[in-house]
Length: 247
Ligand SMILES: [Zn+2]
Image: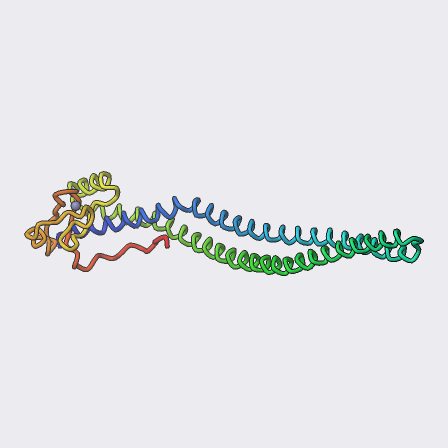
């Protein structure tokens, strides 16, 4: 292989590694925000369920109060029933008793509903607590992983810069100048393989005759369309840069 081509491929790998590292570092604050937002959303769900439970218990206390009041009225009317003098008073008292009993029945139904709802909300609260704890643990694990990625990325930035300096000095200056120019114009992608007869960056077909010429990678050849340096890929790639992929 052309020695400069081999170095250019390696240089591009270093650029890719540096770009990955830059992205990890740049994305870190946003990912921290996402973690915080996820925890806050879980906390909100849990708080909402707990508030529903508190409201249920407050409503139940109100019903119990109302029930006690109606029961008091009922026993008062029953006591008075013995003391009435006329049939008219007696009938009126019976009516009052009937009304009070009806009210008590209504409140007892409501109480039962509240109690069933209480069981349901209690289950929701427990589920929310479990989800909160599980997801919080997951977020913490992701946070830890991110901290690890960040450390790797910061180390990679330094290492890549050092490796690039060493490599750059070994490349023919005019070739290096072309690479640097391409790198700026082509958004960090200056060297790319030919895949299935096409430039893998711009996708334009490379003439079969050129593909044949590239087969031994003995020439430095630029894609007619995007100007990137293209090469034939079946060769064993030089040592890959450290893996600092984000995921
Ligand atoms: Zn191209």
